[in-house]
Amino acid sequence: MRRSLVLTDETSRHPFRATLPPSVKADLHDIPAEALWRLTAEDVRGFATTYVAVTAAVLVFIF
Picture 1 (cartoon, rainbow, N blue to C red):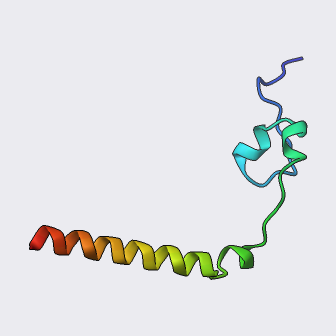
Picture 2 (tube, rainbow, N blue to C red; picture 1 turned 90 degrees about the horizontal axis):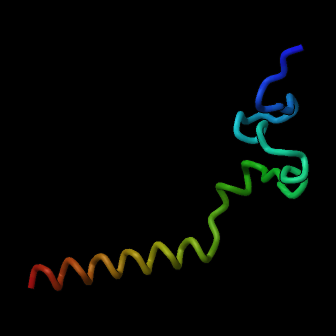
């Protein structure tokens, strides 16, 4: 009987997740796709901070 080196779990959807042992997969939570595209105040603050920092750096470089 020949066994493969990596035992896979057929219920996992991603090849990397299929190679993880069950003890590691127990802590993983599926995040719905809608939650990934939700815009938060932290996202807006990060964008504004980056925009101001890049604008200031460009102005310092020009002048």
